[in-house]
Length: 172
Image (cartoon, rainbow, N blue to C red):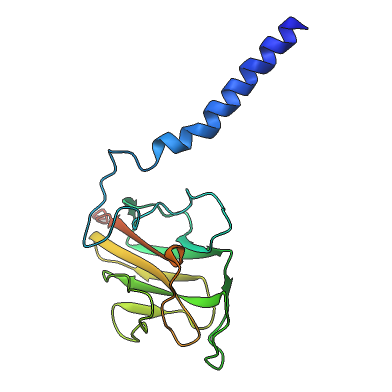
């Protein structure tokens, strides 16, 4: 029985260490967040936040400072929030649709998201787009808008990340 207890304690220690490992890897002093007027935490990693019941949106499988190919299928997701098509412009509590700004800033709450560059609207309720970006650094803002395309006053309903698009290899 003492041997079984020792094995279980070792297993519990290993499981606890594995569960805490992501906490040490996130948000440390070594994070290199470009500031561009954004407060710490605005440029969150896509899927590192635990589900605490608060609404949030994020890029699926895409982290801040990721290196990506020029042609990429951007996918986004929401937790604790309903994604719906614009429809007749009605505002439904806890619901909205995606918008992305390419090399543009996320907007303050209550602002109507423009229907011009750098914004792409997903008023049909879709959650992905295939897009080609030029080589170099790009800043992506994923932001929710309501039925009137107005940004919402929930901190988790926008995500701002930087990606590096790799140069394409020359073909001979």
